[in-house]
Amino acid sequence: MAGKIQAPEKELRFTRAGQASVFWLSAAALAAAGITLLASSLYRHINPLVPHAAWALLPLALSAAMVRIASGMTRHAYLILTPLGIEIFPFIRPASGMKLILWQEIHAAEVNESITRITLHHDAAKTSGIHLSLHPIRRERRTLLAKAINGRLSTASTLDS
Image (cartoon, rainbow, N blue to C red; front, side, top):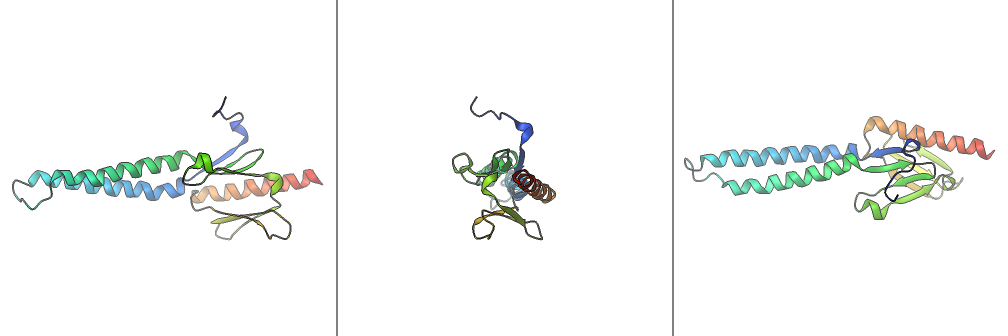
């Protein structure tokens, strides 16, 4: 049963879709450059200074790499809120670098005014914790994330009392 999510209805997944848009745009620009080079190479018999068609392979290969990165960012999670806690997946090697922060470890959460960073405090004095950038998440999903974390923390504090 490894790799299967046991209760997917009890978790919230936030992907890097906000960060992926840069890679999608880069892939489109590189593909356009490659197609332009390929199309212009048809006129080499008229003007020998036009680049050879092989030069189109470089931007097309880079475009394919950008599409692969962007699709991975769009599909795979950056943050997952589970009943156990918050799972954080880094950009490089997310499977091996995943970090789980249990709800019991979080004393309070703060979101800055522009909703671009969330701080999870581990103690009441707010001397230790973790800062998470919210830029990889789409702008309209950031408020949902902040509400979900604050709602979970307020529910946990009322259960403890």
